[in-house]
Image (cartoon, rainbow, N blue to C red; front, side):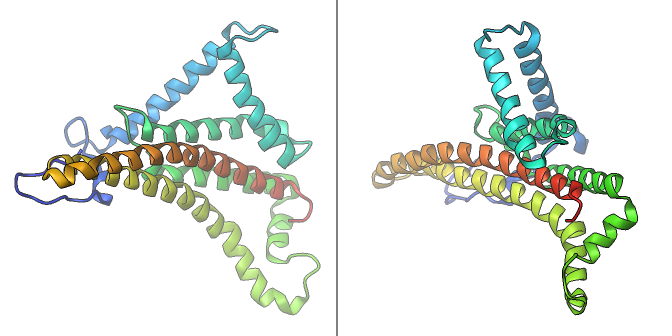
Length: 258
């Protein structure tokens, strides 16, 4: 929370509020986002261990919830997108989806209230891993020479067009894809959390003002509550989009012509 000195006006939240200080001393690896990442791994692991520990034909509520998430990733994101070779990529896509989803949802969880993916380094790492996965798949499937050749020289295109298309394809496959994949996730989480801060902290500031401003504060809080539900939808959607694009890139790398 932003503390205002007596007599100061409202100081709106900014990018500075996302640079959290270390919890222990000056160690940059002990910040809140780092701890949230580790906490998310523990949380996800415990949930699915408990959900599958006493698996039965008639599932419990916990088992049903775990199986629903797994089935969604397996069938809707892996099988429908990648095709008959989908099964070997399910563990990666499942891990990717649940990890992003939980870290996004942290942004609206009381006491935590920070979406880890609003720190751009985390989406960058996930995008780089995905980048190496789909290129590795393409090289393993077709061989390095054929894979790079098909990226540079798209089949069925007039030779003169390669002057323009080849550099664009190289940029797309080796720079644009990982950048857009990471920045889309980061920007949505950053902007959404910033909006929530504006309305919630703005409503708190209005409560400290004169009577007229106090009457406006409930509207600011109401908008903040509505935005919280909207942000939850965006958090789920961004986890889905990131995983879907990862599956699409893998499917493209497996295709004979891409």
